[in-house]
Length: 86
Image (cartoon, rainbow, N blue to C red; front, side, top):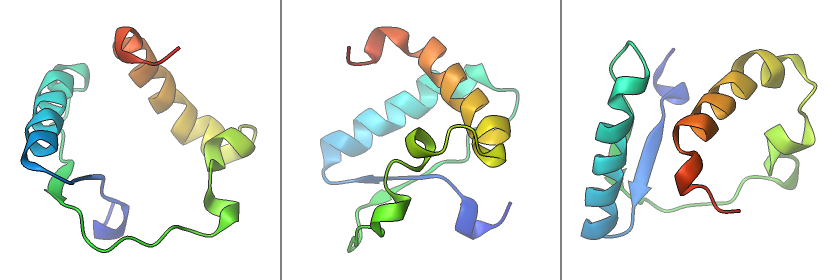
């Protein structure tokens, strides 16, 4: 909820924009609600502090990660298993 929590894909080129749009369209049937991920050109980017890096991997037992993040990651891994790097 709220603009600060929205998902967004930032593209670096026209090709990335097209590919991301195709990925969003392909995923549209996986959830009952529409996908509202924003697709925009990349703005200036500043890396987050180290404690934010790999947050889910470092904190898998924390409540938010277990209840909110883990089910979404599992669903995405299942849906796109053939596209994941091994």
